[in-house]
Amino acid sequence: MSPKFKNPRAKHNFQGRSCSITGVGSYVPEKVLTNADLEKMVETSDEWITSRTGIKERRIAAANEFTSDLAAKAAAKAMKMAGVTADQIDLIIIATLTPDMPFPSTACLVQRKLGAMHAAAFDLEAACSGFIYALEVGQQFIMSQTYETVLVVGAEKLSSIVNWKDRNTCVLFGDGAGAAILQHRPNSHGLLTAVMGADGNKAELLSMPGGGSACPATAASVAAGLHHLRMDGKETFKNAVNAMVSAANEAMRRCDIDITKIKCVIPHQANRRIVDAVSDRLKAAPEQLFINLHKYGNTSAASVAIALDEAITSGRVARGELILLVVFGAGLTWGAAVIEW
Ligand code: UT7
Image (cartoon, rainbow, N blue to C red; front, side, top):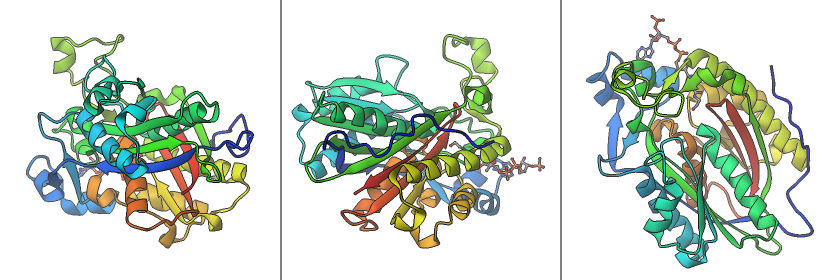
């Protein structure tokens, strides 16, 4: 069943005020884990991983490198592009499902690393949809004139929650971070609309059951593998395609545009077959698609954030052109955003 969307407000543009993305940046750890490396760890093959997912390699953070480190490095690049200093940042939102620790928030740890001591800071958890959720939340503060400069980051160290003995999941995920600076700029648009959705009835499809109030860490919970990510891949796949297509169509409808007006479609980088099914149904041409999942695998909240940075810095999109982001993740959650770069 395709999701329905409430609040069909048109473009985000209140009384002439809009939310621009003035800088983007990304960071991935140095260590590369290839499909050949995984062949030595679990019963799998480069052929299976490539044909079922499109992934060839992923990045793995060092033991002493945490989500906050990846986030701070991506943020520093976005701040440089935007020409923003740490003390100008009013708010830091970190989208992640792999915080450094349950509390304090990773956003507070990033604040300290950046020296952004005038900023408010909090984490946002919407799994792989987190970056779009965070963009939408961040832009509300710009539109309402509460804040001038908001830093939004999608960052993950998924290698810390993957079960490296489970071939069904361990081949899929990687670590990384992507960041954006949100500000109001007269005569410039940026985030035109963002759509968000969720279906908690399907929470069990993709989850990590242990470590929260429902299942605190005990020797038994660790032994039962409850602190690892688990996924019903086939059901997740089906839900992903339907929700991403609906969200993307809703975002374009709100902006009164069709797919031909989009220069670059950036889907959540989970699986090449999901990307192809979504782009077929959206009637997107192959040259409109931005894909980097062969290099990084699924980096959850960082996925479209890294891809957005790479699409912009590689020149795939020029100023004034339209980008469609579309995401899906645990929760279930999903979303789409239209950005005028
Ligand atoms: O980021 C949030 C969103 N995440 C997603 O959207 C992920 C959605 N799901 C998927 O991408 C796919 O479902 C997977 C890539 C996870 C799996 O692909 P699939 O075509 O659905 O494969 P499957 O789960 O049906 O498994 C097919 C076979 C099974 O063997 P049997 O039972 O048919 O004998 C698996 O045991 O492939 C086997 N298999 C593997 N074989 C080699 C599963 N993982 C592997 C592996 N290497 N790594």
